[in-house]
Amino acid sequence: MLRIGMLTSGGDCQALNAAMRGVVKGLVSKRDDVEIYGFQDGYKGLIYSNFKMLTSKDFSGILTLGGTILGTSRQPFKLMRVPDKDGIDKVEAMKHTYHKLNLDCLVILGGNGTHKSANMLREEGLNVVTLPKTIDNDLWGTDMTFGFQSAVDIATDTIDKIHTTATSHSRVFIVEVMGHKVGWVTLHAGIAGGADIILLPEMPYDINSVVDAIEKRGKAGKRFTIIAVAEGAISKEDAALSKKELKEKKAKKKYPSVAYELAEKIQEKTDKEVRITVPGHTQRGGSPCAYDRVLATRLGAEASRAILEGDFGCMVGTRNQEIIRVPLSEVAGKLKYVDPKASIIDEAKTIGISFGDE
Image (cartoon, rainbow, N blue to C red; front, top):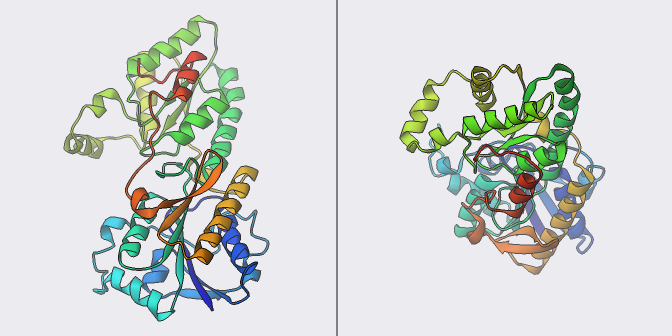
């Protein structure tokens, strides 16, 4: 008997179900003695032994279904070794559940924090295989994460729709895109949607450079400006502060998000009307795009092969369009940032996109 535990952790995204489907279909095509234990709401299900038995039929018809049939929750890695309100040792509880069910492997789908916890469980002696889930595409060790392209498509569609109203009213429109620490979604959606200015967490901006770009468009006869800004974008002024100083400054801020602060500064320095659009969690929602369906299926299939081969302690990812396995020890705790010197940045600047950095 091959007993597999499975959980989805962290923020939801498109193609989680497609990836789990790929794993299960890959396993049952080779073995007819597979048991699937689906843990509810991420690591919580593993901690409190909240699970349900699943069969291959449960994974039929979910290729195009968004969200996750298992539910998810956020369990911060920094709190994993902190007992819960009832004094339960979370790590020991997860190990107990794993061994009580006599699992052969735990399949974990998640992002950066999830992978740190997965690597911890590997270090505790559990057999773990992970899949890279995040709209941010910020997991180290893989070129692409599933959920990313679907989120880019949604953010791009938002920018597309803003174009007509921005043109009609000669306004500056700010579209705030998800991405606290990295700007991959904003970068790709900004280019795809024809944004004039793109502001990323990795490239601190100068408000005067942003204003110059807006005024330059006005002098060229352009009636509007569209700014795609990552929710974690930061000014050069703030980037120069220490972590403590920045935290104190943020605590005193009156703005609900970076887009509103940016809008006020632009209005102070120009005569332009500024409007804000925040697509928010819609970027995580809906059906996965075709690209993500294919990617998630391929990753799931390779994960099933790793399990059948007994190759544990790895994340299944992509490199140069090929599916690879990366040791969890190399992945955990590392983020994949946008390189300000990357060719995609140079190419965007070549066609006149401003990043507010010069």
